[in-house]
Length: 237
Image 1 (cartoon, one colour):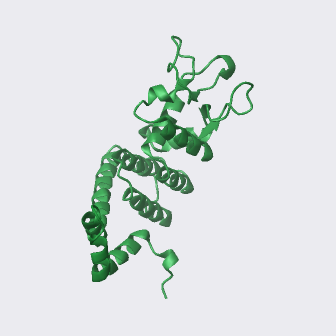
Image 2: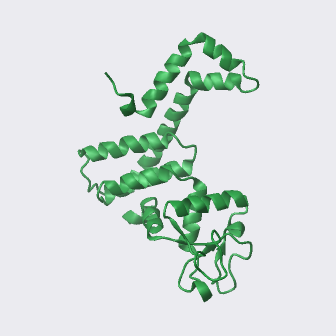
Image 3: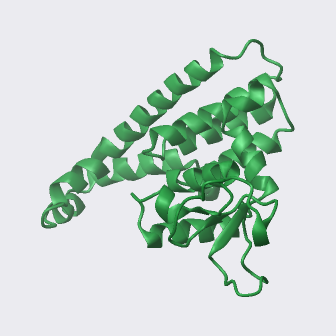
């Protein structure tokens, strides 16, 4: 007997779509939903699989471009861990709409092939990337490139959730995310910072400082530097 808990999500989706296509009454109920019934029926009947296949195809092309920059392979491609990493990455890449995110998945694979680490490192990087969106990556990159502050934050690269100039003339003030990312609302930025702090990628530097509150100032952690290296070409150069 097959244990459903071990079944791949893609197989589960395929089985659901086959069952859905065979249940006429259910399809009629879905189609009867105002405004979205028709598109939803199309999606459940097979369009979802097509979308995932298109994303996998785009990821494969991104990966080919990255691998073209790799001069030699230093990893054991016959290792079961390589197969696990690739299956997981293809699955995660099929679940994202973001072209940038698919490109970052490809960077992780290329980095492991060119400069192999213990297999759990790229696996952890893939798992972490899967949980993040483009806004999270933008914030991480901004934090890592922020100018070293002076004053009460001397020696730290600080980003803030306070309105104000991105930096003063000397580039020493904390970088305001509200100024750096006007396309994102305040709630989205606060939620993204909270999620990054929960994952250990940002440290809430305002906690414990006199006159400062929580969720106002953040600094990147060593984990953020590690993660940033895995999703960029710089690691293999």
